[in-house]
Image (cartoon, rainbow, N blue to C red; front, side, top):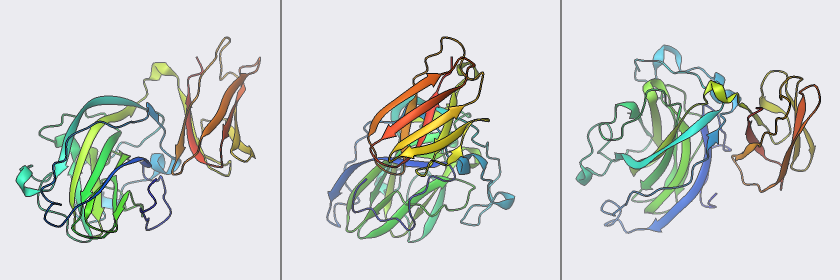
Length: 304
């Protein structure tokens, strides 16, 4: 994570706003260049699976369908209820607020004013076609501020502002981050800019529910070893620095099962030192995970 990013509060992965994936670009620009820079579409890494935190799965939208900006939203939010799988697409530009780019409302001009919140109904986008069962988006957020920008945040539309930040800038320039943001009311997201900036949002894929036939287990374990979200009957514990053990109840793993876990750090940086699954005769088992340091992380595995 870039050192020059400052957060209004400590980074959280609540309301299905997932961890920052990478800080891919930082280039200074003069005030005459910031609006006319050529920003090509390009691809970026995204995880094959994503497990939202418990807050992201259970938090309710604001009452009466209003956003943090106070305007009414017609529609509903489908709660995130378990592991999601990534579907990649050809990168597509969803938003560009620079007027010369000619993007239609609400995906185009003008630039954000200080403290402005906008909602983007991505499922209604005229150029980037997305299915109705999308639960989260793999996005690249890019800002072109004419001066310092304390922070820019994004979260599922229809939910309160979670107090998180994905980008900031100490001077005029071009800054970006790849992030995962949950789909809110009618598949939309909200964006808050603390200062004037143009914004570009690209998408290279989305996340949908894991097919039921996959029988996939998933959860989130906090850095302290407490469970943020686990399947019924499972427990988690911290066994040492960066070491965690998740215990599964009887009949979880069928005979002959040898599941390979998918592990993803959340909100911080850590190196995976090792992971193993042990199955007992009654179908119970343990998942042992060893990171380089204490870390909140998600796990996914398929028992069969």
